[in-house]
Image (tube, rainbow, N blue to C red; front, side, top):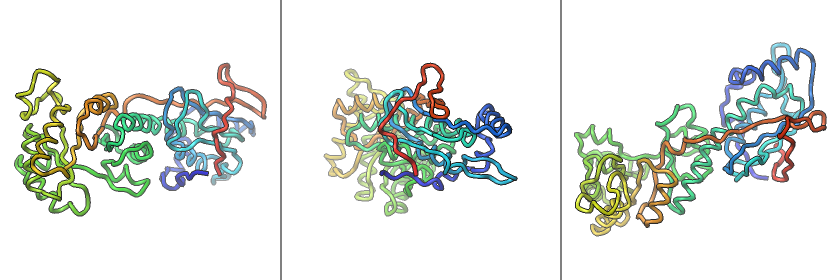
Length: 359
């Protein structure tokens, strides 16, 4: 049996979740009515989605059931987990449309209030995991750096980072994103630091490397002056072995100065395969073969595939907002009551031999 994350790692606001604070009100009303009438229907709840995807958020959903199912009793909380039979797939499993990924069997009044939150966990994390897996497949053996933190609310970082990690991202940009597996955020010498050094990329990179080279792989943004080839060479000469890589991040509205003379046979704006090739050639010719090239700026799976098809000498792709786009919604249905079929039309129980009991 494969391992799952322990519930404590999610730091859930247990009291608020138990009282239905984050749940759709109608589920809270349902739970309240069942409890007040002393009704305890034994149901089988089945959870699925409609895409070919990569499952995420399942351990978080299980943690919600473990810590937050149950009922209030005389001002306290009586847990319900031991009375439920929960079966589930695992984080990172490839899943098919309509395939059950989770079943919950037991007294419905114990977990009616949790449907909103466990479906939401899986919807969000599966979206991220599917998107990261797609860009990882496009990049082959190249590294994927997960850089969407600035494009969404900070509270989603922990679980999103874990989903990206399971799906194959080699690095994340914040400590929060890396916290569930005990890692650290990675990054580059940013434009803001270069600006703080008066626009001198070499000066900013030298001070940064002198301070942090022993703690991280030093990577430097080289597009501040829109002359990535020249700046890459200057940084490589100044930092030597302290430099792990240079990062190309040319705006989609600009043409880098280093390729102005080559315009006419390719789309010259932004980071493009020709620019990457010229940076690689210049670094190699100057004896800096050890310096990696990271590219970023509007990358998604389709753009990565184009770079790979053209043989662009990229070592790592930094991918941001595209990893948060789209949707991957889940649905939960009661499909049996008291062991007998009882589902809305079109939502009958789907048997699966992949689901494993959760202990």
